[in-house]
Amino acid sequence: MNNNFIYVKGARVHNLKNIDVKIPRNKLVVITGLSGSGKSSLAFDTIYAEGQRRYVESLSSYARQFLELMDKPDVDFIEGLSPAIAIDQKATTHNPRSTVGTMTEIYDYLRLLFARIGTPHCPICGREIKKQTPQEIVDQILQLPENSKIVILSPIVIGRKGEYKNLFEKLRRDGFVRVRVDKTNYTLEEEINLNKNKKHDIEIVIDRLIIKDDIKNRLTDSVELSLKYSEGLVKVLNVDKNEEIIFSSRFACPVCGVSLPEIEPRLFSFNSPFGACEECQGLGFKMKVDPDLIIPNKNLSIREGAIKVAGFKSEDGYIINILDDLLSNFGYDVDTKIKDLDEEVLDILFYGTSSKYWFSKRRGSHRYIYWEGLVPIIERRYKETESDEMKEYYEKFMRFLTCPVCNGSGYVRDPVKLWIVAGFVVAVILIVGVCAFALTKRKKLTPEAKT
Image (cartoon, rainbow, N blue to C red; front, side, top):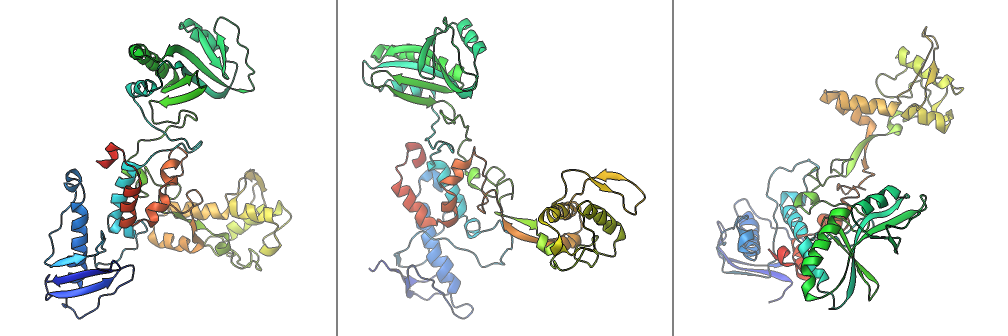
């Protein structure tokens, strides 16, 4: 049969009377008909039900226990059908946290998929990060060619400034004999003078070994000692090839020291505090007060009613006096048209002052005070009010703007978690079930991921 079509033969679900249908793939297809003619029976109870049933049956028995297995629809056969998603016929929601992905629950499958097969990388240097036990580190070292000469090093200082005289003295008291500073070997008995204004790398020489079958116990002790002093790092210098291999027992970059969280599905969710951008709480946008909505007509002065927010209008004498005092510090007054104010004064008017200004005119007192700014005042009032009516009023002076921290993705931009977003955020937004299936086929999965 032609792969460009979905073939349905002998559909008898509910009101369907043994019908045959050929539906083109990769097209927007609309099913129309009278009420009760079987539109939903064909779309949801036949095509979608069979696609979902086939998808669930393709999973392992362990995964199937968490998913609802749909009954096989009453149909002779369906060909050319891919895994399917469906959005039920119900009232639409205006919740910005609801997307096609969350409503169809495919988003949950994708988060699980990424958490299982995702490979973390350092957000700074890009190195792949692996968490290994001491025994796994030992086993990898023993895979080096026999008779290879190696040095076990414990990196205790990585790219930091200082002289470290106290550190060298402590290592000497702990019984160590040698260190490697900036790739140069020293004994702790000699005086080591470092430039305190330059960055240094300091490594304890834990042991020097030759790869043989009988060194496993000694190698294990050396690796564990290195992990203890470096807080989870081991560096192995292959003397013969002059190559270095770095191992980490933590989920952290062995070079940059950036610690990463364990991969969990919730880290891929913009609806979870663990994965959502802290600035916009995962929405991807923020409501920001727009100065152009506060003062839409720049040809007016403050006294003429340029400020359209309640409490700042020309009839509010108290606030007019305060603004007049503020502007007088810069050679202006409330009768000056907004367009004639320079950029510095406009910035102070909208966003407040970082220093105190003289306020005295017509108020019977003389003092220096801070000016909060029109934008912060509106934002504060918006947060503090419990009235829905007032919130709606202040929203008239706001616009929806793309979150500057996550650039609209809704995902956390914390450098520690950036690796989670970097490789997958576009995929989470754009991917569909077929793409997720293709991803699992193309990526070589570890035994743990296959489960």
